[in-house]
Length: 260
Ligand SMILES: Nc1ncnc2c1ncn2[C@@H]1O[C@H](COP(=O)(O)OP(=O)(O)OP(=O)(O)O)[C@@H](O)[C@H]1O
Ligand SMILES: [Mg+2]
Image (cartoon, rainbow, N blue to C red; front, side, top):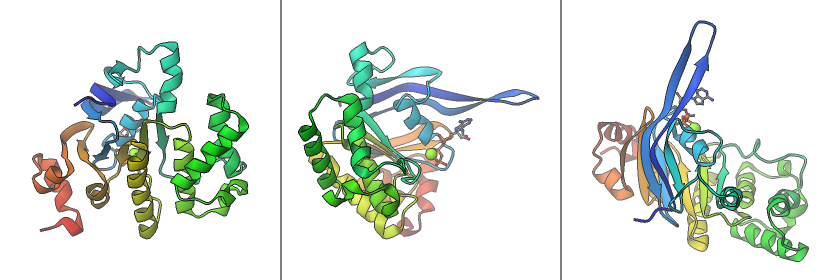
């Protein structure tokens, strides 16, 4: 399979310095995984296993100690000037908490326009057209444009965060626990939205979650992490019907609705 994004033997460490000693946490340990174009890949595993650290490395917020990340078969650490500029447009991230990720002082119209102003040379009417299209895609009405983030519910705010991430037409969206701060009924709406966006835009999604029910419903393939290592990876049905790693079995046996 030709991957859109691939990690190769990726290891990431945090140095913890205090007065007595310096210790090192290996948060991601020799992880090799890949996401195909238009694929939904879920990363699961208990709190602290390294999911967000892996995501942060992919968006270049942190650097690995060893290994590589490839985008379109090319290392993101040896990109040309143009590729370096384009990479953040192709790979966008939405975070768990839509409250803290949207500027409270900006109207939605300006929040969506900002990435276009910074990164593109479209004229005003082209920008308005793109903003209107992305609002439609995430299921928000055009009247939202003149409102501020606090005027929306949590679920709607997450739609706005997704719209902002999609305005530049990325190929990969990283969604780190995008629904865990939301009520169950709203969670389902956002999950369905991600599903429909993948279809509409052939968007690849790296979906980070510890909710195995949501993962079963949404993902094409699943990677299971445990203490920084990718202990198992497979198509979703195989992970759920025939888990191989001991840790995957334990993880699945603790999900109430999956118990047999
Ligand atoms: N900035 C940091 N400095 C030091 N250690 C960190 C830092 N961020 C994370 N860690 C440690 O790295 C490991 C992996 O953390 P990470 O946040 O990637 O886990 P996670 O799988 O996303 O967990 P959660 O499900 O709780 O979000 C943990 O042991 C964590 O304590
Ligand atoms: Mg995390």
